[in-house]
Length: 318
Image 1 (cartoon, rainbow, N blue to C red):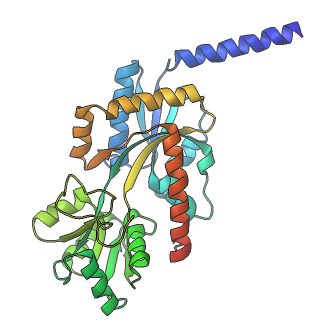
Image 2 (spheres, rainbow, N blue to C red):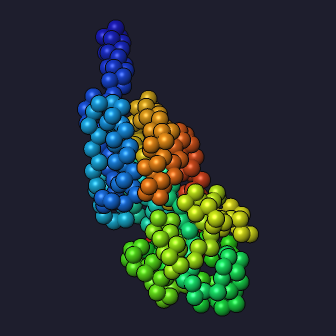
Image 3 (cartoon, one colour):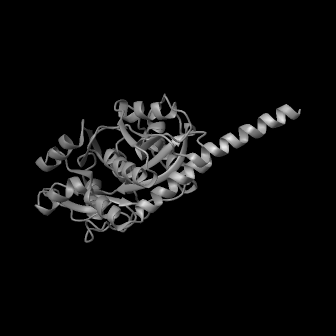
């Protein structure tokens, strides 16, 4: 018994020492998408901050494919020691589990660390559409069932889901046109082949300023600092309407709580800096932050909200 007790004590001391020593080698942040997108840019901001704070290399590894599922699977199967993190857009942690019948990971494979930022979407229409507000657009859609179309870069994208939220909440018949990517979808709205689209503000704003698109409503609960004169959709008789893209850092399930909290705390300090907020604004993003517990609550609430949408709208992966 004495030897067993000594062995347990040594193990506990070892675990404690390892926890205190974290990090003592390079950290990896897996990004399930290609370089240059919001997930990649946000991960590089986090990596730079952690590296400066802790003096250890923080490497961003882009693992692309299968709507981000390949990178998420790689992270889920990594050792839960704090040396592998993953940048998880809401699409991968709350949407895809509802969209795909079989995924190589589940929400339970991850430990929430912190939200990072959100990118707001705006409802834009081709100027040829005779609507200057969301109520006018819905009235037009009711008068022409199935004639008003909305574009998206693919089934399950935020643009698609926002359109479905609008269809259900507005009780109108809208036609969804799915494209392979944001560019082709936005181009056809610009060309008038499609009536409207929920697009990320950084993508839509130049066309709105040029008069090539008309902005009807921002799909967040508060007005966007990037488009302060554009009311939210929620303000226009659709209270609670929200469809934003948000990004978070997760760790493999089983990662020690003290390590999760240390990473989360460093991210909070990073997001509080005016310099960081300016960099985020430069890519059209707004800082969120929050504790692991707050992120866990967001994931739970958002998963339920999207599950309800998928059921009511009959959305299935193609």
